[in-house]
Amino acid sequence: MIAHIQFIKGIDEKVLPDIRLTRSRDGSTGTATFRFKNANILDKSLALSGEITGMYMIDQEGILETRDVSARFVNGKPQAVESIYIMKSPEAWDRFMRFMKRYGESNGLVFTKA
Image 1 (cartoon, rainbow, N blue to C red):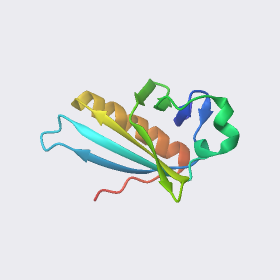
Image 2: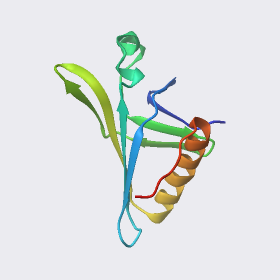
Image 3: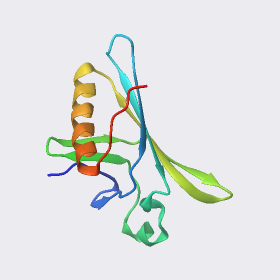
Image 4: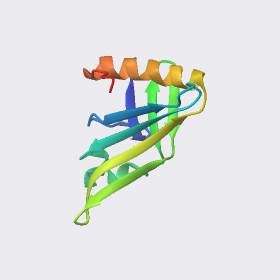
C-alpha cells in the first residue's frame, strides 16, 4: 500500500506539499506544517464530492489525522491549503516519520535538514 494524503475521505490529494518540521529540544513534541499550493481539492469539480473534514495521512499502519486545515486566498481566489499536524510524544514523532518515509518514497520526495 502506498502512502497518500486526503482532505475528503476517498479522494487522494495529487499536489505534493511543502512540509516544514519543528521539534522541541527534548524531543517530546513536534509540529509538521503542510502547504499545498493550488491543491486539487480546491478544484470546483470536487466541491460536490464532500466536505473537507481534516487532513488524513494514510499508509499501511493506519491513519494519522488533523483537523487544523485552512485555505489561503489571494484576490478572493483560493491559492493554497495549509494544515498543521501536532505530535505530542516521541512515539507520535516516530510514527509520523515512518509515514513521511513511505510518502516520500511513493512520491519521489527528499528530506533536507535545515
